[in-house]
Amino acid sequence: MKRIVHKHPLAIRWFHWINFPVLFVMIWSGMLIYWAYDPYKIQIGDYTLISFFPDGFYKFFKLSRRLAEGMAWHFVFMWIFLLNGLLYVGYTVVSGEWRHLVPDRNSFREAVQVTLYDLGLRKSQPPFIKYNGAQKIAYSTIILMGVGSILTGYAIYKPTQFSWLTRLLGGYEAARLEHFVLTVGFVLFFFVHVAQVIRTGWQNFQSIITGVEVIKPHSPNQPTPQGSDNVRPAGPSEPTPSPMTPPTRPALS
Image 1 (cartoon, rainbow, N blue to C red):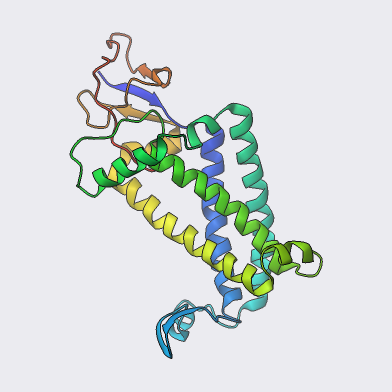
Image 2: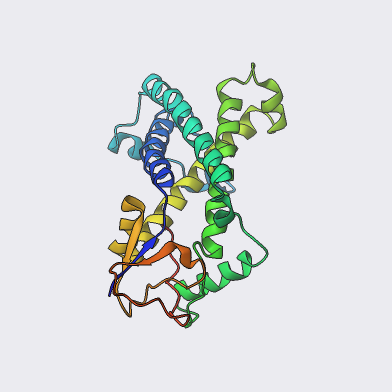
């Protein structure tokens, strides 16, 4: 018999799917702003290894000469990003969901085990309850990155009104660089996140839409019996999961 695993509350799913298009618009509009002054590059001496970004990139995606449009979109969606983030953090605190997200003393060891397993250097699957150590570290880090993006964004948006914040972040140029680095971090997280979701399959992806995941008998993705309050039979005749049920494969979702 199939079993139903309750994974994501409705509020978490809403915050997740609101944040996805908001972050996309923020990054897109940020590129329109960045076009006006794009000094960042990686170079050795006078030789440029990587330029963020060449003129051909702006022309291909039609990002050039749209500074005012970019600023308008960026500053509107900034408030949506901030509000959604505050509601998300507030919900995790009030609901107790933060206990599943905050790394503990075992998280870094678990993260190493998960990484080795994903790279094929470890044969056995590391067990976890709801989120493994790698997920806890990644999700907690992305929240801190969101806070950093908001602070650095305000520091370069209103450097006079928030002069104390701009000075705290090292000045205008430093705050702008920090804002750019955080944006690159969001893009990298997005690609890794999507790759992991694809790797784990449709059933896992479905859980962030419906909130539940249907587990088939003898499935390699069955959850560990720890935290079994989130598991219930899909039918009245289904037996109780055995304590020896193998752990689910770790995934970012």
